[in-house]
Amino acid sequence: VSPRCIEIFWGFIVLSLLNVPLQRCSAAEFAMLVKKWAHLKHRRFGFPKVGLGDVYADEAERYIKQHGGIVRRKMVVNRIIYKKGVIDHVVAETNGSRAQIRGDIYVSAINPVLLKGLIADADFDNRTHFDFFDTLRIFEGVPYISVNIWFDKKISSKRFWAMLGRQASGVPYLNTDFYDFSNIYESHKHASYIASNIIYSNEHEHLSDHEIIDRTADEIRETFPHMDAAVVHSHVHRIPYVIYAPVPGTRAHRYTSATPISNLYLAGDWLVREVPQCMEAAVRSGYKCAEAIFSQYGISKQICDDRVF
Image 1: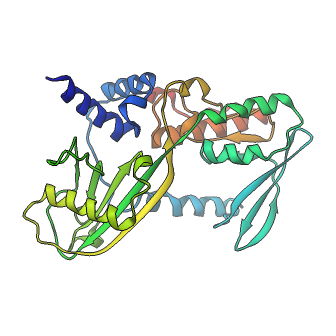
Image 2: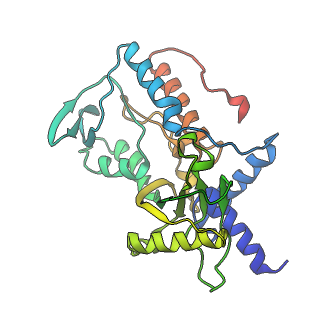
Image 3: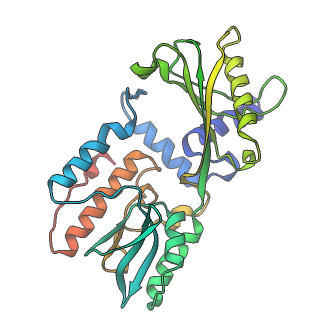
């Protein structure tokens, strides 16, 4: 096998699973991913028949409300007010108006890049608190461009495929993975609705939506050269942060759920050391955050099952 083939293969694996180019990926993160996959038994890919948010979001909201909680939608926290060594309140905006929200405990589940922006405006009077959050500058986000194209008829029975390497013309493929939701969601079964992802899209941000749709449609036609379906609708969604970029040195700056600020806790996949970033890591961080809060109140309770890690 030629070195070029090896580079293409591993480059594809790293980009699709860790979301950065091979040349930028942390060897530690990659080794952990391979170790995790090697220990899995009965590995199979699954496709949910509904959006992942539909699986848990409504039930989670119902649970919160049943236990006396309040869910506020479309509120953007744009400032953390810090006084006398603790978080006093946060300032949030909704529909052009501002609101002050106070609580006994604050849990940040936002990504480290957004948190860095909020913390930067906090007027810390404790050097330890400043130093703790200073390493947030190490983290950078992975941007995506997600492409959605609706066709007037079915293209194939495939649920998923991916593009590896370059087109015949020598131009690298724009998209990495494709999903035909007409073969996944019952509600779209009559005509192909294809979603694809341009992963680590920094170098493609200059492309217009029209150019992205045209190139994506061409890549779909390369996979199905005999298709005669026409595009009836399309949408390009630019996502500035999907996950953090696992570049060298990042693991050395993983945070803990508890912070030096006694009423501020953190949750998110970027905190977990035991597994690569994934949905399981995000869930694990939530359990660990709850355990840390329990501990503050003198409650010793383990709710995170360490056996699966």
